[in-house]
Amino acid sequence: TIPKEPPKIQRLDDSVVNRIAAGEVIQRPVSAVKELVENSLDAGSTSVNVAVKDGGLKLIQVSDDGHGIRYEDLPILCERHTTSKLSKYEDLQSIKSMGFRGEALASMTYVGHVMVTTITKGQLHGYRSSYRDGVMENEPKACAAVKGTQIMVENLFYNMIARRKTLQNSSDDYTKIVDLLSRFAIHHTNHGASRSDVHSIATSSRMDSIRTVYGVSVARNLIKIEASDIDHSTSLFEMDGFISNSNYVAKKTTMVLFINDRLVECSALKRAIEIVYAATLPKASKPFIYMSIVLPPEHVDVNVHPTKREVSLLNLEVIIEKVQSVVESKLRESDEARTFQEQT
Ligand code: ADP
Ligand code: MG
Image 1 (tube, rainbow, N blue to C red):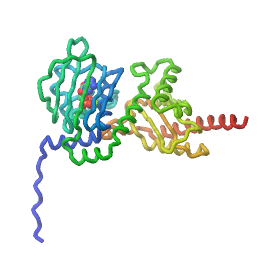
Image 2 (cartoon, rainbow, N blue to C red):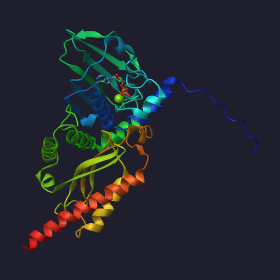
Image 3 (spheres, protein in one colour):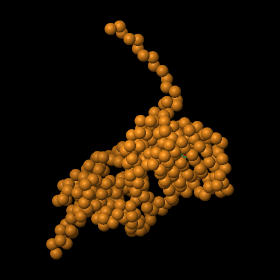
Image 4 (cartoon, protein in one colour):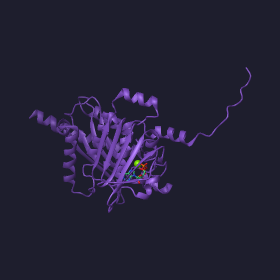
């Protein structure tokens, strides 16, 4: 055959680039909810409300009582790479906010219709503006507002036919959204309060919220766990949480993991804990785990996943070993206590 001419390389239109990128950041309705709730938490909110219609495809609405958005920032709010949380690359090392890339809101405007209502402190009225493809569609309109920000995302994936169809048929995003909010709810029990709160108070209210969210049968069978590692008076690792005891029965592991207050997944850690359960407890139930790990920010790389679902940790092996040994000893303790009770 006659050798073909090499195909010509062309630059993609920004709109195409942005829509492709948006599809990665906002993979499904629950990813939009996560980004919006994280923004609300980053804004210092003490209360966040979420409403969805049609599993989030028709409508996602997140309202908070945070610091709001300045009027003069509204025009660039939904452009890609506009953020109030990061200014130079080095800031990433010590970032405390959950957001940092300025991509979430922009992404939503490339795959849905976004409307923002916000008011800042001391203002008599708020502003409302709507966005499409990164662009503010109209001058912000003055409107009534109470406190904070409300963001509405409508018709998610209206321009991604295949994805919309798949999601419409699966219809399990509602469940995923409820699950996500449950996870946030138990971690942010004392939201707004600082970590130096009296420990017993923090503990009991966290337990209360686990009971409310996951039910009595879970809450009744939990053991408190804690561990820390301090070197030259700087804390290298702090962990606390609740794990299920030997009376708990479940077919699937529930692991609610926060690392430096970020809701993340860590399959290596999850597997490591499952192994301890299988080896320690006679009947092989999968565990329930709520765990909050605090590490020096420079030990956590937050920029490894498009949806920020995973983080990468320096010293992961050491952390895993430590967690395994704490979990194992707590489990043995509680199992021995139970065996003893049964005998007497
Ligand atoms: P990021 O969170 O990475 O900065 P986003 O696209 O999620 O990027 O948000 C862009 C900016 O919009 C944020 O940096 C923040 O200043 C502002 N913002 C978004 N949501 C809220 C909110 N609920 N309350 C106050 N400000 C918000
Ligand atoms: Mg964000």
